[in-house]
Image (cartoon, rainbow, N blue to C red; front, top):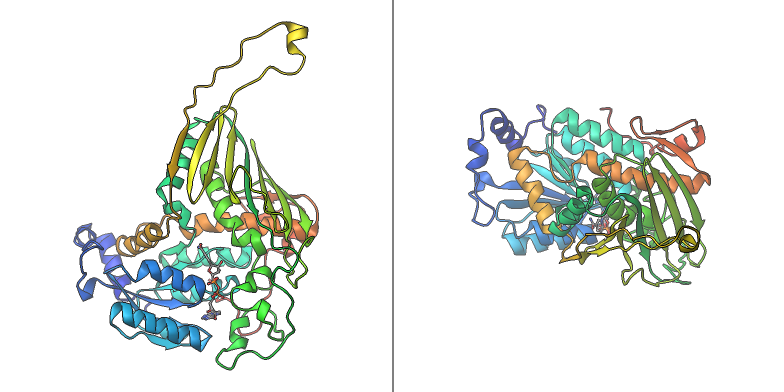
Amino acid sequence: MSSDGITRRGFVGAVGATAGASTILGAPSASTAAPPSEKIRLVLIGAGSRGNQLLDSFLPQNDVEIVGVADVDDQHAAKTAERVKKAKNNQPDAARDYRSMLDRKDVDGVIIATPDHWHALPAIQAVLAGKDVYVEKPVAHNVAEGQAMLRAARKTNRIMAVGTQQRSSTHFQRAVEIVKSGALGKVFWVQTWNYENISPTGIGKYPDGEAPSYVDYERWLGPAPLRPFNPNRFHLLFRWFFDYAGGMMSDWGVHLNDIVLWALGAKGPKSVYTTGGILTSDDNRDTPDTMQVVYEFPECVLTYSMRKGNGLKFNGHDYGIVFCGTDGSLMLDRSGFEVIPDKTVLPYGIKMVHGDRPLRKIDLKPEKARGVDGQDAHVRNFLDCVKSRAKPTSDIEIAHRSTNTCHLGNIAYKVGRKLEWDTENETFRNDPEANAHLKREPRKGYELPEV
Ligand SMILES: NC(=O)c1ccc[n+]([C@@H]2O[C@H](COP(=O)([O-])OP(=O)(O)OC[C@H]3O[C@@H](n4cnc5c(N)ncnc54)[C@H](O)[C@@H]3O)[C@@H](O)[C@H]2O)c1
């Protein structure tokens, strides 16, 4: 590991930050071929499904070189390294263990697309080694890990961007601008949701067995409890088990609640209550398939509704966000948004008791936009921040708070009661049992470094 914590890019960044903008302004645009000295050299940690989706955006960047691919699954590492070689004409290192790659002085940053329980450790080790980080959402497996990542990023002054990419999409930006402008009137109710029908088979039930020979399964488990290999608790499907992730709440809910916090200008709710269970799936998941989470903000209620046993869409959308204000609503997902003006009515009986009254006129104009999820722009934003040292659009602090809303929803589900949340101190008020869920003891050998 680098002894001084300053890599090639870190040094350029430090000079750029202190010696004026010339280094930054002089940087070539991404659309023209960058000279080798201006290239950002990255290592991909976790070359599964998402790691390869991210390469769709990283590989076309002319100022990016992928110099290493680390995956505990040899097949994923080899296949992805081959893909990089074909796209970029350079042969990246491929290894099971990313740590030797963090020792390389010519590496500027890492892309982390491992399962949630494997976000905090490599992210913290990377910034301590002087690397910048793009880490996937949700930020971490639990609140304490997210706090440690934030501390580490700030202590080392490294970029830590998180893969909540919707923030980089222009129609999400416009939608948030509309909500913030007050055009919807007083926004007092927001709903986020994910609906689909996978009942009853879901992910099925499979017996424990032998891990494939080409996988370092012990290291895949990492900080999670040691247990026999089960294909349902491994690649892709890990997200349905609390040992490694947080179910649909964290997997998808984080994208939705992230936009809500942004639009409300909030750091977190003041309370949370969750009800739900495994009501329609006959598989071996341990995260709920049915969930209703109610968050209270000072002047607004947010509900996250999730069901996997019925796919009836809400106003034509199987997932999304709706902001409800006294003048109208804004319906939002990755395909676009729609502003729907409201109309007021006279309350029941008022005509007979008090006589006719004029209705309040609402001036809100309908507006529609189409959109995309924002991944390409989000990746570009990270790369630009590596050069400029500016805070990324989804800086770790922002995404940590959005991720916390998901941890809160899951913790309220586990303890089964309404919890009061202290947003500043990131603890539950007067609730040692709920507070115990904010962290977990990692397995020996996978503890986070002290920061
Ligand atoms: N931003 C988005 O829209 C988005 C979309 C999908 C997934 N994700 C996130 O990406 C992450 C990965 O999800 P996925 O669907 O790609 O899972 P996946 O199982 O397909 O891929 C994870 C990869 O990480 C590897 N891995 C596990 N431990 C490792 C370690 N210690 N070192 C190196 N490699 C290791 C696995 O072998 C696997 O190849 C999750 O946190 C998920 O929430 C984000």
